[in-house]
Length: 113
Ligand SMILES: [Zn+2]
Image (cartoon, rainbow, N blue to C red; front, side, top):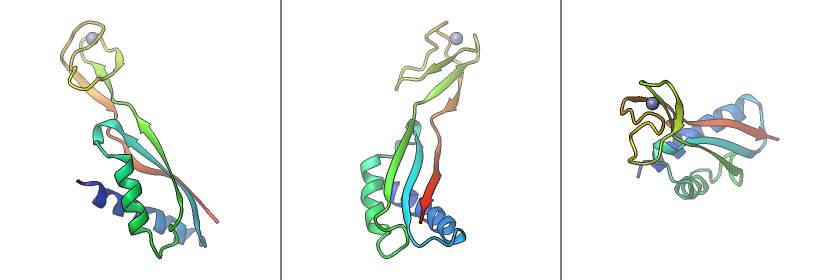
Protein backbone atom coordinates (compact mmCIF):
# COMPACT_ATOMS: atom_id res chain seq x y z
CA UNK A 1 0.00 0.00 0.00
CA UNK A 2 2.21 2.81 -1.16
CA UNK A 3 -0.53 4.76 -2.91
CA UNK A 4 -1.10 7.02 0.09
CA UNK A 5 2.46 8.39 -0.01
CA UNK A 6 2.39 8.63 -3.80
CA UNK A 7 -0.91 10.46 -3.83
CA UNK A 8 0.34 12.84 -1.17
CA UNK A 9 3.46 13.74 -3.14
CA UNK A 10 1.44 14.20 -6.34
CA UNK A 11 -0.97 16.44 -4.51
CA UNK A 12 1.98 18.47 -3.18
CA UNK A 13 3.22 19.00 -6.74
CA UNK A 14 -0.25 20.00 -7.92
CA UNK A 15 -0.77 22.47 -5.08
CA UNK A 16 2.63 24.01 -5.61
CA UNK A 17 1.91 24.53 -9.31
CA UNK A 18 -1.56 25.86 -8.58
CA UNK A 19 -0.10 28.33 -6.10
CA UNK A 20 2.50 29.52 -8.61
CA UNK A 21 -0.24 30.04 -11.18
CA UNK A 22 -2.28 31.90 -8.56
CA UNK A 23 -5.15 29.55 -9.24
CA UNK A 24 -8.43 29.64 -7.40
CA UNK A 25 -9.23 26.09 -8.21
CA UNK A 26 -7.72 23.03 -9.85
CA UNK A 27 -9.98 21.64 -12.59
CA UNK A 28 -8.22 18.63 -13.97
CA UNK A 29 -5.09 16.68 -13.14
CA UNK A 30 -3.45 14.29 -15.55
CA UNK A 31 -1.27 11.61 -14.04
CA UNK A 32 1.07 9.35 -15.95
CA UNK A 33 1.41 5.98 -14.30
CA UNK A 34 3.62 3.22 -15.63
CA UNK A 35 2.37 -0.31 -15.37
CA UNK A 36 5.48 -1.43 -13.49
CA UNK A 37 4.85 0.91 -10.59
CA UNK A 38 1.92 -1.29 -9.56
CA UNK A 39 -0.05 1.79 -8.57
CA UNK A 40 -3.78 1.11 -8.47
CA UNK A 41 -5.91 3.85 -9.97
CA UNK A 42 -8.82 3.28 -7.61
CA UNK A 43 -6.57 3.68 -4.58
CA UNK A 44 -5.15 6.92 -5.88
CA UNK A 45 -8.67 8.26 -6.47
CA UNK A 46 -9.71 7.24 -3.00
CA UNK A 47 -6.73 8.86 -1.28
CA UNK A 48 -6.94 11.90 -3.48
CA UNK A 49 -10.54 12.61 -2.44
CA UNK A 50 -9.49 12.29 1.14
CA UNK A 51 -6.22 14.27 1.00
CA UNK A 52 -7.45 17.09 -1.22
CA UNK A 53 -10.26 18.09 1.13
CA UNK A 54 -9.98 21.74 1.97
CA UNK A 55 -7.26 22.40 -0.61
CA UNK A 56 -7.37 24.08 -4.02
CA UNK A 57 -7.46 20.64 -5.59
CA UNK A 58 -10.62 19.53 -3.86
CA UNK A 59 -13.10 18.20 -6.40
CA UNK A 60 -10.56 18.17 -9.24
CA UNK A 61 -11.01 15.54 -11.92
CA UNK A 62 -8.25 12.95 -12.09
CA UNK A 63 -7.25 11.58 -15.45
CA UNK A 64 -4.90 8.63 -15.71
CA UNK A 65 -2.55 7.86 -18.54
CA UNK A 66 -1.29 4.34 -18.16
CA UNK A 67 2.07 3.45 -19.71
CA UNK A 68 2.64 -0.14 -20.77
CA UNK A 69 5.89 -1.79 -19.79
CA UNK A 70 8.31 -1.70 -22.68
CA UNK A 71 11.67 -3.34 -22.96
CA UNK A 72 14.53 -3.28 -25.41
CA UNK A 73 16.25 -6.55 -26.18
CA UNK A 74 20.00 -6.39 -25.66
CA UNK A 75 20.51 -9.16 -28.18
CA UNK A 76 18.55 -8.00 -31.23
CA UNK A 77 17.88 -4.41 -30.13
CA UNK A 78 14.11 -4.61 -30.79
CA UNK A 79 11.50 -2.89 -28.66
CA UNK A 80 8.57 -4.87 -27.36
CA UNK A 81 5.84 -4.75 -24.76
CA UNK A 82 6.79 -6.76 -21.75
CA UNK A 83 4.10 -9.04 -20.41
CA UNK A 84 4.08 -9.94 -16.78
CA UNK A 85 6.45 -12.81 -15.95
CA UNK A 86 7.32 -13.29 -19.58
CA UNK A 87 10.93 -12.21 -19.50
CA UNK A 88 12.06 -13.17 -22.96
CA UNK A 89 12.33 -11.31 -26.22
CA UNK A 90 9.45 -12.30 -28.57
CA UNK A 91 11.75 -11.86 -31.57
CA UNK A 92 14.86 -13.80 -30.67
CA UNK A 93 14.06 -15.37 -27.29
CA UNK A 94 16.87 -13.38 -25.67
CA UNK A 95 16.64 -12.97 -21.91
CA UNK A 96 18.71 -9.85 -21.56
CA UNK A 97 16.77 -6.67 -21.79
CA UNK A 98 16.43 -3.24 -20.35
CA UNK A 99 13.21 -1.61 -19.28
CA UNK A 100 12.64 1.55 -21.28
CA UNK A 101 9.08 2.41 -20.22
CA UNK A 102 6.64 1.50 -17.50
CA UNK A 103 8.29 3.04 -14.45
CA UNK A 104 6.79 6.47 -15.00
CA UNK A 105 5.00 8.14 -12.16
CA UNK A 106 4.40 11.84 -12.37
CA UNK A 107 1.91 14.65 -12.75
CA UNK A 108 1.79 15.42 -16.43
CA UNK A 109 -0.42 18.46 -16.37
CA UNK A 110 -2.92 20.37 -14.36
CA UNK A 111 -5.65 22.72 -15.45
CA UNK A 112 -6.39 25.60 -13.15
CA UNK A 113 -8.94 28.35 -12.97
ZN1 LIG B 1 15.72 -10.07 -29.10
